[in-house]
Amino acid sequence: MFACIVTASAVGCFVSPYPGFALFAAGVQIATSIKMGNVWRKFVILGLGQLQSTRGAGLFTIIPILHRVIAVIDGRIRTTAFSAGQTLTKDTVPVNVDAIICWHVHDSDRAALTITDYR
Image (cartoon, rainbow, N blue to C red):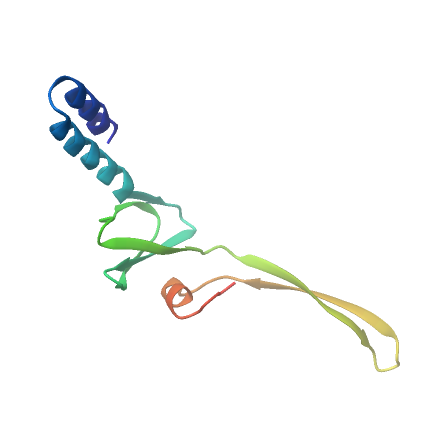
């Protein structure tokens, strides 16, 4: 990738701008097609508007014109804190109730495509 861009600038300056532009475009294409996923991340990829695949950990490539990463789903356990407010007990004592929900995404395809805002 970096070699294509350096070669493109050298060819564009010394030979002709047209091959330099082609090499520069190839370097940009390679740079945008390489992706790296962590263990806890899932990449949901659409190809021409349809679900192509879900990629996880490791190095993978996409074709930037045909494929698009539409969502990066975090697979770790997440917490959401909320306050339910004040309530009364059986013997009419006021109690403040706070809670925490622990959750994580099992199916990243459905979370990205069928739910508007899964968080």
